[in-house]
Length: 159
Image 1 (cartoon, rainbow, N blue to C red):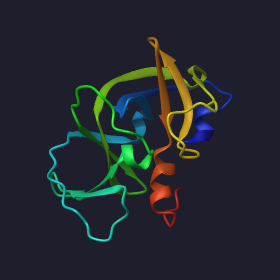
Image 2: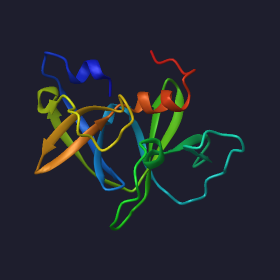
Image 3: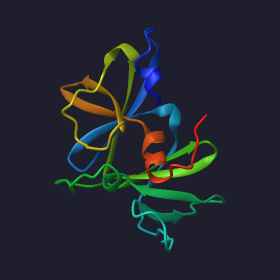
């Protein structure tokens, strides 16, 4: 989700997909999400690829690069039951999947419900978290998926 949209003065209604990676709850703007697929472990490794890229999958007639979100955020493995999924995005015409531990639900909120991120975040990756949504006694850190992608490949320019 773009930082400008979150911190905009005007209230806008948005939908946030809540998911878990490691021991933490995260969210992403649903408008960035194309689909959610079960993680089946049938990923084809790519020799010489970035360490955060697990490989590629081809569920139908298109290739999806899969990023290990836990590794890209520099997180430890969490405890608990996992129902691993791949959150598929289509950003800049690229099909990119984010491997997560669990997908929970979608929250309909306004941008006014999202606070600026403080200093105490789950990740040390600068700029990855663009906001905090406190809802239903849960703290959800909103991720900038574009920032995570550009940390892996700085040559990608976003519109």
